[in-house]
Length: 567
Image 1 (cartoon, rainbow, N blue to C red):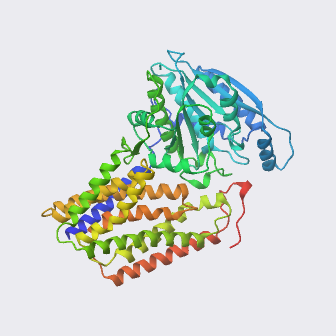
Image 2 (cartoon, rainbow, N blue to C red; image 1 turned 180 degrees about the horizontal axis):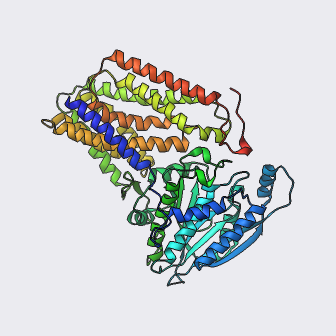
Image 3 (cartoon, one colour; image 1 turned 30 degrees about the vertical axis):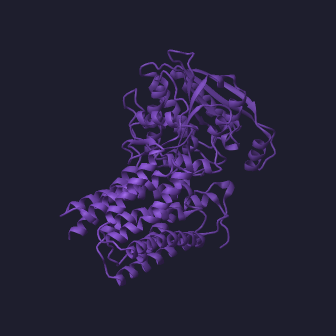
């Protein structure tokens, strides 16, 4: 009974923590204090900007330009337009969308400045793009970023003056190849006044707004974020992963031209709304808007009032702890975390563990990691070809998450279910993950925390179970399991949203770490029951994959890439 209590308590607590980590804050109403960010106020701008599709060079885009100029001038900012012709590539892409053969359009950047008390100090630049893709209202991408910038400078205008100027750059033709950003950072003389950049984007219509990219040598920059933002969502793992991807935003153009202190924010929940013809203001998650504006306002205030902007410093490990605060430490400390984890698992195995038990645990964990990765890969193949409608695959991410969850349960039940695991087996199960953490600490120290910290907590729980008397060991193991499992659930959700359509096998790592801490609390059940449950879960996962493969193209899919590949 005590073990059931620990297992159920850890599972419930983990789910609560995962919900906390992945749920945006409640939107603040339009009557919020004037110095605060209000999604209610910002939504008025979102509704006007995203009233209709407004691709670069269109008549609707010109209406949006006039609207934005009027809004920024009404706040009292120094506001101007900079116009320039579309590039050849941008013109070709726009003509492909419109199925016409028009000459290069005239594009427009909008620049506004909220003066600080020391106008000679490098400014803080808030950046977003005001164009949408063809046939999409673009409420999330990027009316949200534009409206956030406007509401942020309005809030700053109603607070104490900042030391530094706050500049607003609303770029044109981001969707056509970052054209407006390249124009500003390559040619506009005002770029010399910029010291720090905060870019705001989206690849969906909801979810937590996350700090997913920074400038290089981000130690000092990350410390400013950690100290300033009250409800953070950030990780050095995300920064590391983004560096390996071919994706780009307006910040890409900026970082090619100068040594700016830089931050990039976006949300990627409700992925079907990315570039969608249904991406209307009504479908936008206002909590995501509040999340973006709240974080960026906190950060802008900190940067704008600083005597010195963050200098280059060695990259650090950082991650938010369930949205409550940002943990941050030097990357070299990962060696100590890794060493302590190994010692704790050694302590857990010290009481009568045989080499055979340890080897058996290591073999089971290796089987789980490889087996679940292969299973998820195969299920994804069943769900549809890797080359197809990118936007349709994004819209299917929630179904793919269900598919992955069922597959992970089946793999865990088969590999670890129905067997009583002693301390030696549990410690042995940590060995493949300890080796993975070692490899990460060598090759990617700012990303290694995602394995090292769970191993440290899991080792603490394993040692407590092996040596503590009475219920103390179960309590410690349940608390550490809840913390680790809660983080792994939220991590798996984020990974599936980010790269799940192409690489669902990434869920194998959160699965392994969650199983490592949860299995010691799992009451042993008859193997026959677990195998039946695993078979049922696998059948449902396969059914979900087939449904994704044969369902019609999502109505959310962008019109310029809208087809369903033959099965």
